[in-house]
Image (cartoon, rainbow, N blue to C red; front, side, top):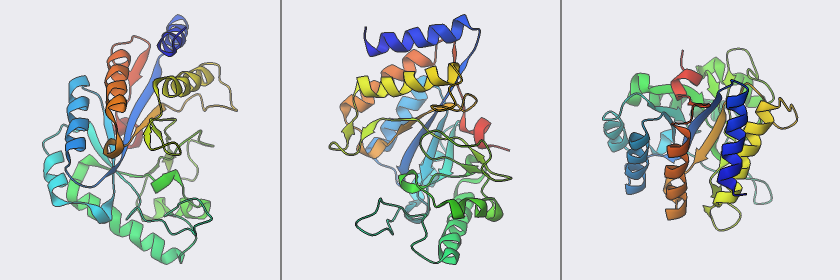
Length: 257
């Protein structure tokens, strides 16, 4: 049985139970207009689905602001940290939003980034934080709503839908990139196993593996996609967007007011 067949079988069980699987799409590390970004936007347009584009404020190029204004509001901007710079020691996992610097500096940068994205993108910008490397110090989380951020998106199962008052968390769960094995596509089998597994855990309400109410998140990184990754995304969205047991959720539905 192929991984695609496994996915079809899982979705059939959602349909048999008269349930709809919610799925959303986040793409990280945007800052400039590049051929890979254009390809991402073209693929999104072909399937007419929502996309949460995580933009790095400190690296933002004016051309990206102009380019996104040509896209429908289904392409939403999220805040990807501030400069996507690692401040951990070589022996630690990479992190920008950690406790390696004084908190006022970290908080000040995030507030500056929030202001920059608000000015650049207006209502297209949804004030949700996407921590670089999907890591954020727990001590920083309660500060996010205090500076105007209403959402948080990392990777893996969330502990709670609202980690603190005024902050809604929706993560991603299927990473298309094999970061430890050459930074190429993780492969069809691995990607579909992660997707099917998360959907199954949600359907069965397995609290150890998934939050049943949390939409399943697909995570892509357009800047490092190889041809296999692009082909997989195209085939995946073509399969999901027409399935009666699937609803692809727009980022504004998740993080909008």
